[in-house]
Amino acid sequence: MHYLRYRVFRRRLEWPVSNFSCMEHDQFDTEDAVYIVHIDEKDNVDACTRLLPTTKPNLLADVYPHLVDGEVPKADDIWETTRFCADYETAPANITGLLVAAMLEYGIQLGLRHYVSVSDIRIEPLLRRAGWNPQRLGEPQPTGTDTAAAEIFEVSEDALAKVRMRSKIPKQLLNDTPIYHLAPVYSDLRAAA
Image (cartoon, rainbow, N blue to C red; front, top):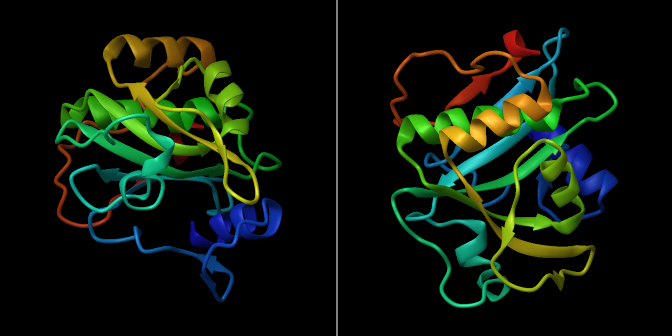
């Protein structure tokens, strides 16, 4: 997962992110983080995202609060999603929808109302095509390598149904095992692809 992030964020997008031995990581990769990953048939991670409670340190509140008009959302039922990435050469064609659907399933299980994010605005059309519509929390601003925006996304059964329909995902992706947030969780979407 950290190698994929290195390839996407450091090499392809040329973000000035920290890395060690070709593994991208930052100060928000903590025990509070939950990761959703997609693993291909060769056991390689070809897509992932990181989820964090907004009540803990997070990228939007601690690094990019100026992207939000007003107060940065912070509540037990609002989590942040960042480091959303995929290897679009090897991942399934509907990988954006797969990641979003898994995030929505996880969020519904936790009782979340929203996810927030700091994103390169180039990802917004991909999310809309998958059926998930970001609402901007402020005006996009240049970040040095791209243009980013703070966004908020609905977490609901309706949002999940729309993503499943648009992305042609016929079934639940995450199993019914209760989620205990004790340590980083790597959700394997291999069976869903």
